[in-house]
Image (cartoon, rainbow, N blue to C red):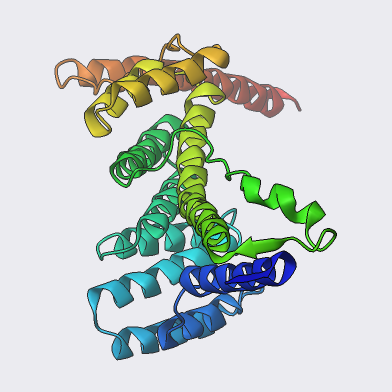
Length: 314
């Protein structure tokens, strides 16, 4: 049994595309819809944070499973982070909610995003502390994210979408010659389409993991490559301890090399002010008081002389 090539191909194409859409579409759930509604409240600095908190609190009471709780805390972190982390209040809330979300099971994509938010929040809060101290705190969060990126198989290089299957090369001739196509040939073409779509689905799954991994990597290079004091040895040691992958450590050091930041800057030591010893403290007090005391005496003598001169005049 044979079918006209154009009709058969159209049917196989429709079936393959419909199957791909159904398989790749994420399942909708009630929690996801309500989280999207909360995300829709974002207005930058004008975000109604009280309403966001109230709605999220209600969801935490309604959805008690660990995964759901993690999604809710993650949405809170996302709202605060995307509403402007230049506001220290938002940065602090983002880092705390991200840390809370990481206590629960999350999919790999959201876990990496939470590590980014937590690291960014640690950079932008507690500004009374020196930058190098805040940098170390943030680096630990970013490196933990890199560790999980390796565990979940995030690619080191950008994933590439596969090319169009060779069967599409026949499209230009379909319908022109009236040739007949066997069902076996149509099946082969449908399998090629399905295989290509499966590869594209895998790329779509891995692409955000690669993007988040790259963001974590770039944050580390920016902190240690552009901001002073330079401390490549600190980053190398932490990366070795937390990530433990020589390839990642080497890539970080290569990134710092490009920034000419492999050499550590000296950190100025802050020497504590010595407390005065008890022995001889009275003598030191008297010696320090002599200059102002002498000035007072001189002024008193001058005033006394002026007074006597005024008294002697008739």
